[in-house]
Image (cartoon, rainbow, N blue to C red; front, side, top):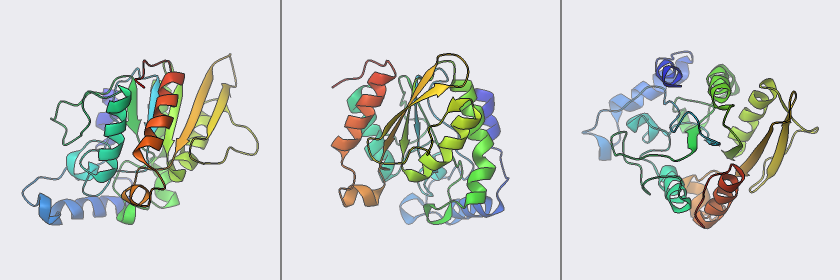
Length: 234
């Protein structure tokens, strides 16, 4: 996994995303004008033997693209890491930068697109170009992975073909995204199972409109953690 994470950070496969992430790193937001932006693809974060994976969308332009760590330094991350800490899966409720000492317990956070996209909207081609990174990450996680929590419909649609290609049997029709959705997948060979959960994305818009509340996120995260065999706190 460390070798994969290192390889991800050097990817330049999508010209539009490369240009955007680097431009954001040069121009910067006024609040971060004195900081040096990461401005590269952002690797996954968390232990390589995690029984639970959390899948988002892509790094935020002034969040992960600035700090170099998934969901770190932006409003979505503030909500997610507070929930992870409340459930007992993170050592602290905030994520500021890569050197803040934050640790995750039994959970790994990743995304189907590793570069910050303009307007938080990767194209279908960019999603597909980035897919092999997610596929390799899930292959490495497979020996210990028991559950996945997907944040948002984009991540849900991106992950399903990755799981199918990895040998998990998807029901027909393919399961629809919805908050608190839960699908149990069985392996094509052997008797392994994988539990797939869904939550609305903790975007600033979803939180401000109360489409998703912190309590809703904590509840589904707690269910996914317990299903994965983790000692989650109530």
